[in-house]
Length: 228
Image 1 (tube, rainbow, N blue to C red):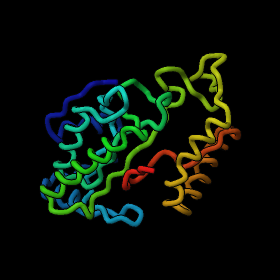
Image 2 (image 1 turned 90 degrees about the vertical axis):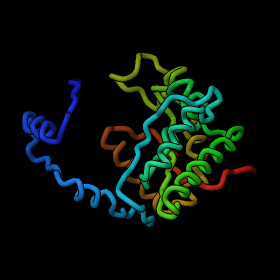
Image 3 (image 1 turned 120 degrees about the vertical axis):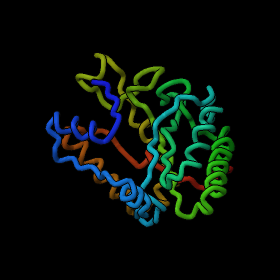
């Protein structure tokens, strides 16, 4: 990948032209850019306060037990004060064996209070600086790294290019346990969950994958921590 350092908008525009991307258009007026980013955005049935989003990039700085570390907390404190109204909390493993590295966040019953504290701090800082969290959306990306798990590959099917010969395929019972873990989320999403399942299965079928059972385990919206 070629590295680049653009000093101004003209350099970026010239680079796009050089690779044949003349169709890309840029807004040169800073006031117009600010107005565009300040527009509210409808996300499902939620009115998000502006069009600025922070994507779920992993910091790989959690503690060994999966809790948010000091650098994790500092990062989300800064996100809270950034003004972005869509802040997507980074990939958080749902099982210890499904972590991509030993510092990836991992949410479980023993550390749920640490995540509740992180979310409370995040909302408090944002509220103090911007007056309200009513138009703030903070989804959490739940993940299982599958074949990229750091301890050993965990695959639902053998891929001829990505997997080594003889890589063990997970049993259906294991996949079903991941599926059942999303019961609460599915109940909240209702028909949206069923629609999502249908769309994902259609993608799998196009790639000749029929065996895998798939459910909504990937994304939840923060709620009160489960204590029972």
